[in-house]
Length: 393
Image (tube, rainbow, N blue to C red):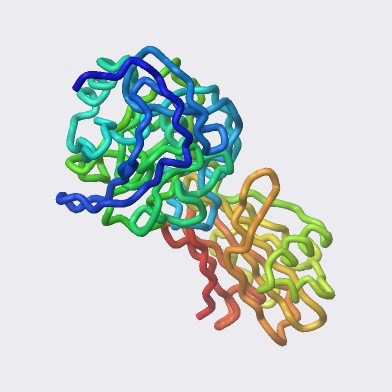
């Protein structure tokens, strides 16, 4: 095909997007347009609108992703986040780069090229003057200027509508794609290349922009790739690290009240809030039973609990009014912010309620009003991928 050398300016409004289901079973997005900008026209995607800018090479369809800060990672407790692989939300700033409109070959009407080994994919990008995108560049292009969870906004729409990010990049999340990044030290997938996106058969939540995968977990015959251009951004994902299983976290009544009031499920518990006194309350709980600690430590302070790398919870116990005690577990969102994970209310129970924990037992802790007494003790359990449940036999 002969490449048109004269650049023209085509308004972005003439470009519409549609979804096609390809014979291989995956979903891809392609351009459906009566007018198409020449291949050496580079539209700016600052606000998701096209402002053409001419470049000499390479001739493929590309968009500019501007310099800017954006939200990376997944909010704890949402979308079945895998905490050992996907970090909690934080903010990262990247410099400007260019990215292909669609997965390779990035040619209108042609399906993505699947099953290419990663090194071969990198070489094919190099022949076009490009490179594989870093995983944070991929996520930035996917999230768009508003740091959306999915390329289409607040949910995955690639199977039923437009699959275009706020920066105008098509198909991000619809297929797994190779990136230039590797899982870092401390990750269970350390040294393996990072894939972004997910197979068409994956749950909708796995198509979010922050989802990370590896060739160990994905069928590589379904993997696509796309190219980025310009100097690669040096920023990397901070891999979740495993710290102490339990750490005491003192809190005030005002702090507990504010955390409880954030969610309608626990808002009523904030009324007439009473904190259990330490260490007197621990002595009371132990004194009601036979006195054998069974190797556990006890507290009525808050506990920061890390059952696995990347998953952190705050566990609190207190009383509301005269005769309603409770245990509440919050997801830790970082920067001293928390959201409700689970709660357990004990009516007609004055307490005190103490937390029992052991550094050698990460997946659980206990709460009790009478340690060693039948029916007076419950459990807080971690359930993969990122849930905490409270049970009392």
